[in-house]
Image (cartoon, rainbow, N blue to C red; front, side, top):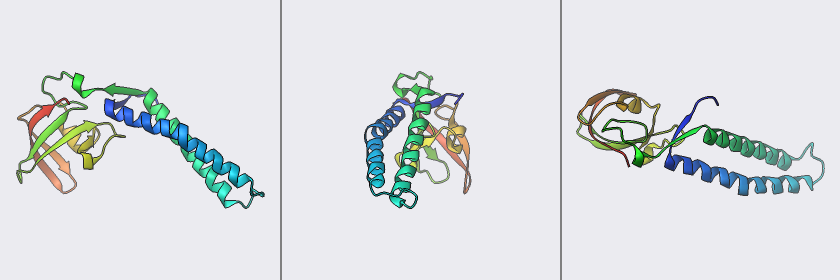
Length: 159
């Protein structure tokens, strides 16, 4: 990877935890499964062996992917940001939908951290792209799947 991967401090910790889990537990489980399957004899028609090798390939691939992302990570702690009220990566934005008055908060995070159930939206999402660089009081138009929506930015927080 030639580019940096933006991550919040929390997102980086989640990736580190997953990497630790894969290296310390999943690898051992896969190695044991391969050894068990080998003990059954002929490997050419051994479905357990094939499944264990596939799992091993997945685990090793995920480890390599996580190590690559973490080595290229630009870790941003929202609490240390001083963006003078501007919406930036890792900020939390309180919005009001101008059509129905519904209020919602989103944190702008990296692609790997995005989880709409936790109100974390990817920096590459349409809503984040519309918000970046704006200030409280600004009205933004977001191209949603259901059509354009307008939101007023109520507050920008760095938490």
